[in-house]
Image 1 (spheres, rainbow, N blue to C red):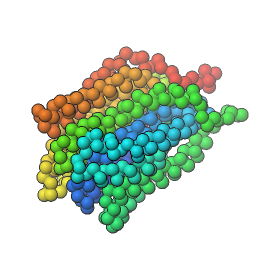
Image 2: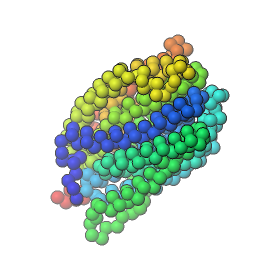
Image 3: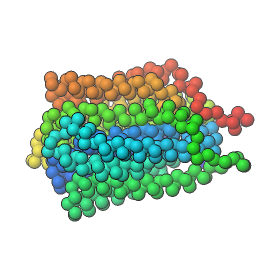
Image 4: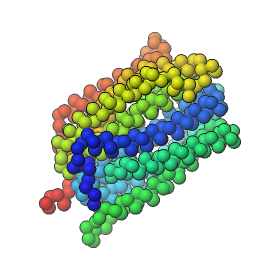
Length: 456
């Protein structure tokens, strides 16, 4: 087997080169989400753009559940890899896949049946309601494929093979763009075409990902005579305890967006369209920060499995330097090009209010992305070690701040209060998680024990 870079090489460079494919891959994933918005906004209209934006906040919750669940469940896989327990590593990966397939089928049924009621409760404007429901019905019909695609990507990252999801995301993104142009521009299918294109692109990628993962897992040698179980209830229980807080952490932005959207909806379709465009750009800007947190999580899990907690401390310090560098680049880019970025989504001449709303959002939030990076990296240590209770509580505080400030302050300060709440939540979340990290209890967590290392 090739030397495991996570537990042997320089932490800073290891984290950077491991996170880089995830960053590029997630940018491609966000890219085709953004293309949906651009194509609808330019070729269908503002109401259709608002419909896709209203749907996006709802559907993104489910995708974040998949990503968070995959990352949480893969902590166990990473620790078995670090401990060189390859048979149990395979069982952990299989258990996660089977469990989340069942979960995705249940969520698909829930979303398909209840999405009209939920969108109504979110006060979706009447002019965009029908298109939003049409988009969601198609989306939830294909949710198991979309869900499993993200679980499989997390499994590859747990094995330290972040380049494989990158190539699959590039393939999925290009296919999605081609299908978008064909169905929306050529066939005039509107928001239905956007939803169908997304389901087909990610569904095909999920099937390919599954085949590749089976081949990759077989590369890890097993002791003579050892058999691999396809499912283990004990691993499911341990993985679930880690996955639930991870789901909360990954979903926190999306759940906040969903709850806050009922406030934004009250300002009308044009404000919703501008806000939706702004949040799409935000979702791209946080990609390197979330990827760094996920990289730290895998780094932590493998090094604790290898009984090297000091490398985890070195890794967190290195991740902070990387986060600062990413934050400076993002802030400068939005500061110089925010007008041009917004014009890609919204025609200023057709809807000046939508353009102004999105532009105001971007110019404010540009200064604060470094804090979500600090938060994500610190949370990554706690998640990767399995020390998840305070980490979960900190993220719930983050959500509570965003919702309360948005709902209580918009009557006084207007729609701007929605984005004032975001950095406040990020900063408080980081301070709570970092204070818990400093007590060092995470370093004494041990989810797995290596019989091989004990024998040595």
